[in-house]
Length: 303
Image (cartoon, rainbow, N blue to C red; front, side, top):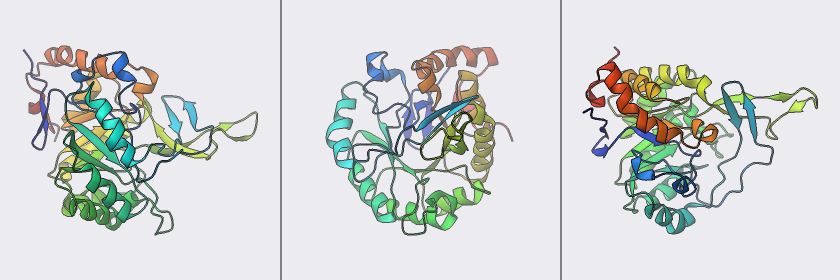
């Protein structure tokens, strides 16, 4: 009998499969089609201090091997998430969740994280530093080591739960940013967030997406995500959650061999709503095929 358990710090997961933030909503719709308790955890939709309608439409564009989105962090705001969305999710998912938090200033990150820190249902706070810093010319927090570290320190100062920083791949040196977050007190890291992409409607001669560019995700980015997970996990001593292009049980194992302790499934949920369920069910079969008795034995096995 194979052992699919894994750990994110002290948090034990029955398996490493986690739907990524923004691709699973708050889980309620998915609970109508399968039992969510088979999942390791759920990273809920990214949350900001105030409700956000998101970017203008159209904001989704298909492309080979994935899709581009510019949804714009549409969410009901932190107060509604705590008072409505999380209680509703607790009725259909009985494990700890990952609360994904976004912000446009250090103060906003700290405010939202301090509020969600008091929710027992939350096991990990995942901080998305891909947002533009409104006090620094719009540059994303995650593209600068000092800015990413500043967010990390501010959040750690007002929380007691483990804090994982979700890193952007749109940088020259992701390791320097990961190490800055670790030194600032991060308990773990999630990588990668979406890459930056674009599509043009050649008949109308204009960008497909109203915002012109958006986040590129899907199977095509898996090799990039794998490379970054490998680099960061070997440079840092804190746990890494691998994310980006994961679409199969074999991908999960490959991510873990690169150094991930758990794995998030993103765009594949939009293509196939049963993706996470199918991966969870296929994982023991793939492990047996490869002679893997415990997933914990293969984390970072590739040197």
